[in-house]
Amino acid sequence: MYNFDEIVDRTHSDSSKWTGGRSKGYPDDILGMWTADMDFEVCPAVTEALKERICNHRIYGYNVPKNIRCEEAVCAWMKKRHNWEPKPEWIVNTPGVVAAISMAVQAYTEEGESVLIQRPVYYPFTNAVINNKRNLVTTPLKLVNGRYEIDFEDFEHKIQENQVKLFILCNPHNPVGRVWTKDELTKMGQICLKHQVRVVSDEIHCDFLYDHHVYTPFASISEEFAQISITCTAASKTFNIAGLRYSSIFIPNDTMREEFQNRVAACALRCNMFGSIATCAAYEEGEEWFDEVLAYIRENISFFKNYLAKELPMLKVIDPEGLYLVWVDFSAFHLEDHELTDFMIYDAHVWLDEGYIFGPEGHNFERFNLACSRKIVQESVDRIKKAAIKKGLI
Image (cartoon, rainbow, N blue to C red; front, side, top):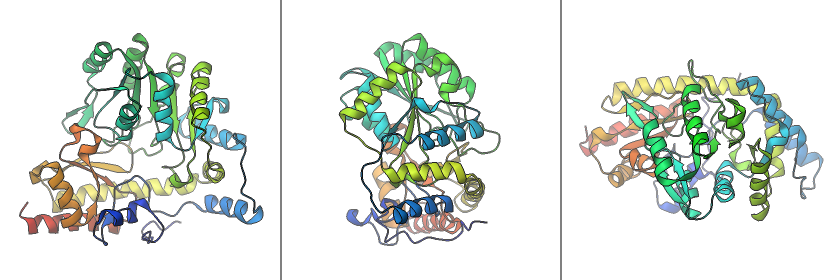
């Protein structure tokens, strides 16, 4: 029904993904495959809901802080898609998950206290800790036979050694593509309970699941886990509306929710009214569109893996269990991080997220965004191969 093969020209839309390189002096024809938004037009229900509000009520003043219908739609989606029944009253809205993570660090820790993350991981986690003058503690994920695993012994050791107060979980994990199993989440949760560690779980990519993999909300595992956690979600990835700045943060514990709300109030943050309108429409009417998007991205991932194996077999793809982001090992090129970055941008004209920004454990990796036309996916591989041959890397 929807044509996701169509290439939508985003070069004149103030898209950070496609035009943000101009100020950096990047090539004009560079392929934007870095930041996590999709190149697909949003579902018609979102467009129609926004047009209805914009055209039929042409006053855009302050909106009420709580959109009850939207919160009910978010909860209904979670129940239907993921067998989790959160309550609308648990929700605190923020203008994005990244902002929510920073506010959680402020709400639940003091300056100098320790916060744990699992690298390689979404780089704003590191920034949220360091920029708020907390002590950054890392426990590396282990790459075992092409699949990342948790080092539970190191996980607990780091918590004990550093008196960790807060753990920032990525579930599913960005960038390595793991969809953590219920058993893995339970082990981490039990360790956090044992040592009185609160958990901030970024679950924004939860709808992108492949094959037999099942997303388990951390807070859904037990009432004890729910009472020490906040769950960060948004329609922004699922329905490609990140620019509308609206997220739903679930906090079941009354005290934790009040502490978080106080930080939101202290920062004087308000959400975009169009964000709540789009979110409500997406969750109520966008399921068919999303299912088709998911199927298309699944095929993109398969195509990418097969085409890369054919054209650049020395590169290693970490098979994603979720996300539309794919983690690729470029160590066969034998380039230092800055050399690999320059090669991608100025030789291949492909703009990716460099692995090292996710932590030193991402050395020699690149993250591809495959939520785009299949022609763009193929073009990226062709450009990298052509540039690698010219540069004598293969």
